[in-house]
Each structure stands twice: as structure tokens, then as C-alpha cells.
Length: 168
Image 1 (cartoon, rainbow, N blue to C red):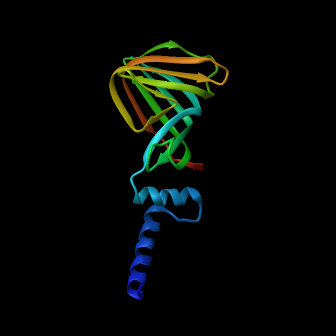
Image 2 (image 1 turned 60 degrees about the vertical axis):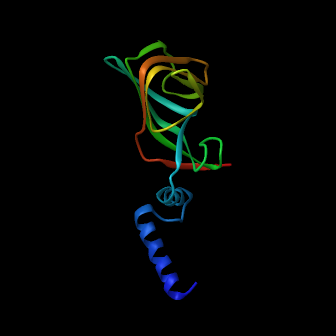
Image 3 (image 1 turned 30 degrees about the vertical axis):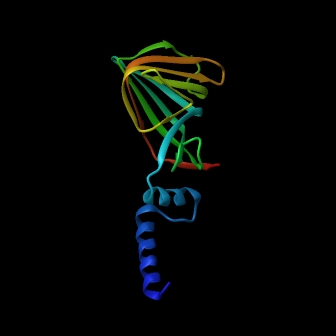
């Protein structure tokens, strides 16, 4: 590579660093990659912490202060990527809580989303907005269950992500 090309590459790296962070830590390196490539993102129920169940009229909101988030160029939670901890919010509209645990806040062990007869066990891509027949079930490590039915679900990230580990 010639001197002019090298200088151009260094300038591009400086611009990338300015907007995407430094490559000195895995978390900032991931931000660098995320800025350059489209990453697929998914929420994993297992090991995520459900902090609050809020009822607002006909809506139910679940707040997770520490949700497990997978990022991958392929299928998150299956293909190679990274794991992060991040706050998320799940809003169910026209919702009914069928069962509610008495041990919230708590870490979750298992769960699923059933959206228009398609089951998503333990992992679901985010952000998400779906309308139709919605059912969600979350089980705490103490085997207490939260089960919700609704006709709309919206899942969004609600805070800064913190790097956890690589996923192989």
C-alpha cells in the first residue's frame, strides 16, 4: 500500500473512531463494528432480569434493567456474535395478565413469545412491533410464571448496552 493510500486509511480510521469509539476495549470495538455493519439483535429471556410489571389502562409494560442481548451478523443467539446487557421495555396492548409471579424483580430462567401462532422460544429479534394474537410466558428461577395475552407487542431497547462476552 502506498503512502497516500495509507494516509487515506488512517484518516478513515480517525473518522470512524470519532463517531464509533475506540478499539481499546471489546465493548468499544463492538460499537466500531456495529457502526460499520448491520447487526441483527435479539433479546434472550434466560438470565435476563425482570424488574417491573406495570399496568397502564389496557396495557402492560415489562421493564428489564438487565436484559441479555445478542448481536450477530447472522442469527443472534445461534451464530457467532457478542452478548450484551441492556435495559429493554416490552409493551403489551389490550393485555390481560393470566398469571403473575410474586417474586419480581427476579432473573428469568425460561420463556417464549407466541405471535400469530409462531413460537419464539427464549430468543426474539428486536426491535419488534407485531399485532395479532400475542401470548408471552416468562418463568423465574423459582418456577413462578408470568403469562400475558394481548393483541399487540412492542419491544424496544431502553438504555445503553454494556458488553458482556463473545458468543461462539
